[in-house]
Image (cartoon, rainbow, N blue to C red; front, top):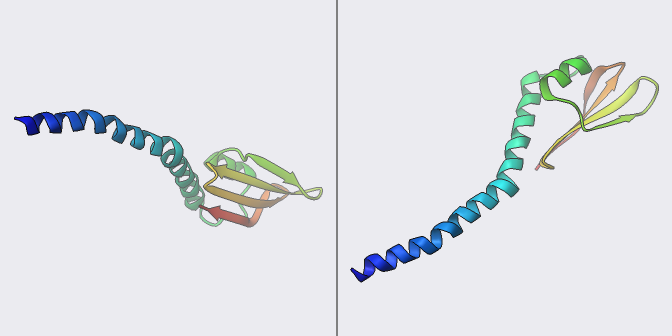
Length: 105
């Protein structure tokens, strides 16, 4: 009977610890990985990005977080998800010229 009390006491002590560790993982790591994978899949579903318009891409993946204009009709647009996935596309006259860079962490 004493073993049952010991097991019960240990479960009462360890259960909040396990739940706390799982919650921390989800809040810190899991959620950002989920967002990064989701954005990456959206880009993959578009296929070859060259020749697609800015409107087509933003309709599929959402608005970019950063825009840098280089010349009159040329700019780079950046998308970022949880600092785990980052992609930069180059556009000329609102037509995608291709991927400049992609970082997957």
